Image (tube, rainbow, N blue to C red; front, side):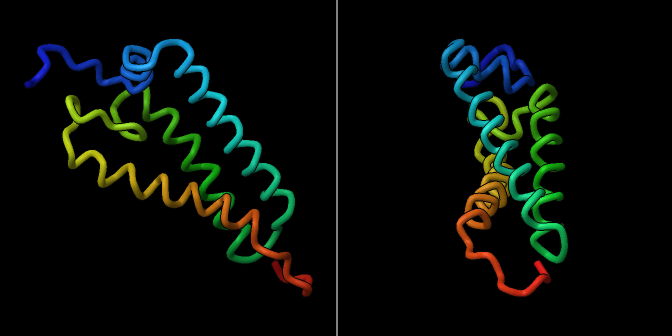
Amino acid sequence: ILPEVNSHNNYVDLFSQVGIVGLVLFFWFAAEIALLGRRLHARYTRGFASGYVNGMLAVGVGALVLMVFADWLLPFVYNIGFPGFQASVLVWLFLGGLVALEHMPQPISSEQ
């Protein structure tokens, strides 16, 4: 079944599917990821980890902006189809890398 109208806006779709409570929970989740990124940004000031954290902070902001224009971070099958999940899975995996980085032990040397 194909819809007659496509919102092209992830926030509108999210609100229509899960209501205001779900939208608030999504923004809470996004804020927690941003706070995690800030903590990791303060912890890692050099090396790969620093670049990874900075890149993921930029990707997170970019993804939240892109959600206004397309179903990108939370694709709905009726809008973008199953191919839309291929792009979003990578972002979710890399955001999960921030959680993994938080749980990694600190290196003893000054090089981070």
